[in-house]
Image 1 (cartoon, rainbow, N blue to C red):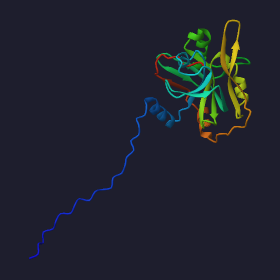
Image 2: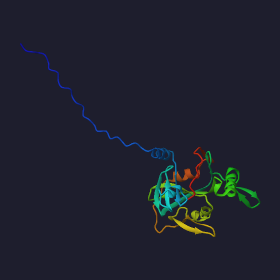
Image 3: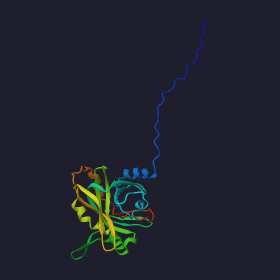
Image 4: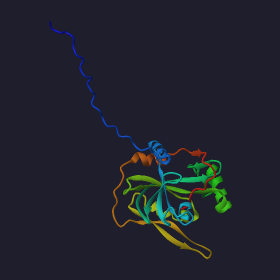
Length: 234
């Protein structure tokens, strides 16, 4: 007699797939990714001996940096090749919140004399009368294309020294340029500030007109509660 009982077959094993687990991102890296997805523009500045990271020995003095977070600085070196693409007015005030005013509301205040009005004028007056402790700055912000980094960054001419350099920046709009740190002296002090000059080579240009258009059409004002921290003046 034939035994019709079937022996259970062994279970079939599913093929395994290796799963790569990414290392956790830092808070600054996450914030940067979110900001860039919203069209955020990084800030570039000259890190002088007055900058906190330089005082602490964390960053080379008189090197340019892209600021990517509260403590995230990308070292660009002593010189930076760039193409200034556009400019706009900017007044900053900080304390419990940071206020950025992009609309200077230029008006003819007396026959033949034009001047900013509104919030921009208020912050300008505060900066002019309060000096270094005014918690206010004003000037012109430039959009720079950085070919080596393949990214845009802003550069704010918001100090007296940098406002004197605005005319040279404007002349270089759309042209291959180089930023360098220049030693400046008067009867009381010596300091370094950024100056712009023609680049010795022709730089690759960005074709991202959308970024330029966005820069030239900001909201009239922006407010952000970031605490009472002084922006770097490089």
